[in-house]
Image (cartoon, rainbow, N blue to C red; front, side, top):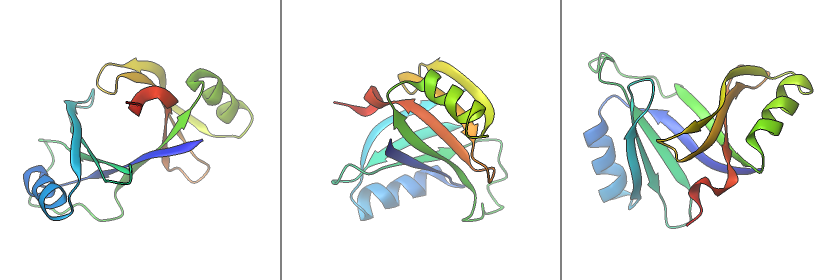
Length: 130
């Protein structure tokens, strides 16, 4: 498995993107609205590391989001369906959603929780191949 990206909730998308694009030098890969109504923006570093920033307009943006508000970790896999089946049935992970074909991500994806309750996205390995 390959680590594909880390996703972080943000309270101010505009200032977040300004900082990461201008100050850090990340490049925008894509932006789309997910099924949960959140705006998803993917930025990539020169070394290929990708960060996903999520913003939901219904969040009270005067209340800061704690830095521990990790949304999920994403891992690239060869076969999303088989991996979900294995991790849920054999490794004891909790099934959350999918597998499904995501228009926004442009790939087959699924969500599970690890034994600690952390969100894990399993995404087709080819999703971010250029």
